[in-house]
Length: 182
Length: 221
Image (cartoon, rainbow over all chains, first blue to last red; front, side, top):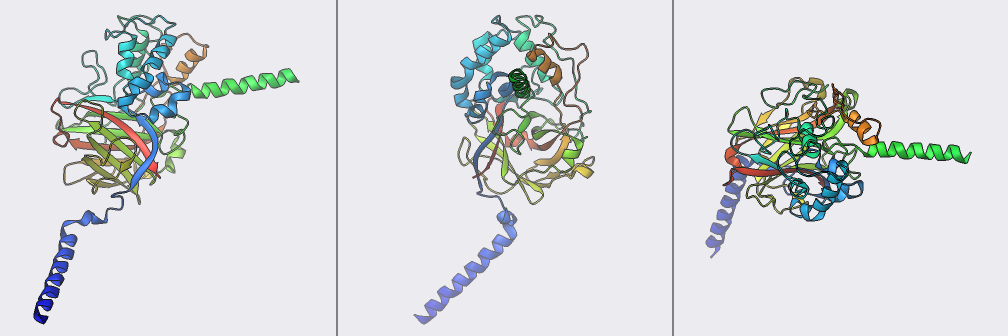
């Protein structure tokens, strides 16, 4: 009986010893200072460039950031259409993608960046549409053309390009790709 | 007397409106985040120099001058989180979480989140930990690569966004009718705090070959 108890204590000690051993060798990240920490206060939210700032009204800006993408179209598509027509004096028909106001704003009001895992990644290069976003992509000219350029992209020529075609610094060809700060 | 007050009041209102019509990319987009560590400027996702990898760029704290950048830091109370939908329903299936602690940026995932939506719990242990590159030595960025092949950078960079925002303000303000023949980049000479994460595509499975990505910031309770 007594010896049984000693055996059990011995096994426990052995198990504990092994436990601490394996912890030391296999889980260095057990010391990870952030695991399980909760970040629950909503901040900012962005998919495509410029959506919140172009189409969301001042009063809705915080709530847009606090709406999950699956609920954004229901909450904001109609408001986006109103804003799009306001930019165009009520005259928006279709754009170069062949999208009418409801269709165009149906796409943009779900604010996620579409990304392809194969082939070229670009916001829009004349051929590929919404397959990612490169640092070099002139997303402003793309947006201006889709908003003001009409069915051919040729309407309102003074509004469809800001004539800033590239960044003020050259991007790197290797990681981390962005240029050093000023 | 009354008239003077009225003019001043009008001028103040005009100034406020001018500040409000800020079509940047997402710079200073909403009252709750403007001027804070949670203010996202831009999200980029593109194929890496190695075509087997996808690069995620999340930028915050825009419109910083060099002097401001010299003292800028990430915030230990703020998480930057890339949300990734790989099934086409615009609900995140994977997340990449970025948390700053003790001078280093900890990158978690890509991993299935504890729950979807706005409340985020740090899942598992870091895939890669990278020291934040100091402003003074930012011409030689510090990078780190973890055991799963994920490479990370965190620190100040030139804001890659470009736009003649000033002229756009004039157009929306009614003092100009169009852009200039040669535009001027309002973001020239300004910096952001940036996190860049390059991930092997093998860690981002999708049967359709497509992802939907969005970037969130959130703070501790």
